[in-house]
Amino acid sequence: MIENSISKGKINKKIKELIGRTIEKNAGRLAFLVPETAVYKMEKFIAPKVTALVKEELLGFIGLIDFREIVEEKVRNFPLDELEDAIKDVTEKHLTHITLLGGVLGFVIGLAQIALNIYL
Image (cartoon, rainbow, N blue to C red; front, side, top):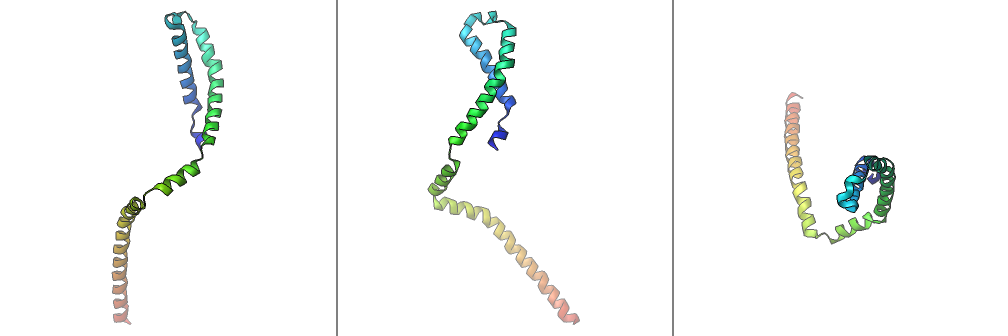
């Protein structure tokens, strides 16, 4: 999922920006002397290779993170009172609706039984 969400286009664009900034930073006031064709070639040929490398390495770094352990630790350290309050807040509304629905259904079934008893 993470690999699919990493956009090569966005990374490639960022790499091109970094190439431009690197030229400006290292060449300083003389950056205008760097031919546009050289910049274009760097962006065209180097940026996609750097982009692929960044994506590959980024996924490698993400692979080093144990998300399961992080989530388990967060759940273990989550205060039970807060968890209980959160569950109550979510379920209270739904339980109220379920209770009302049960009352309405009970009333309808009661009316149906009365009607059946009268006609039978």
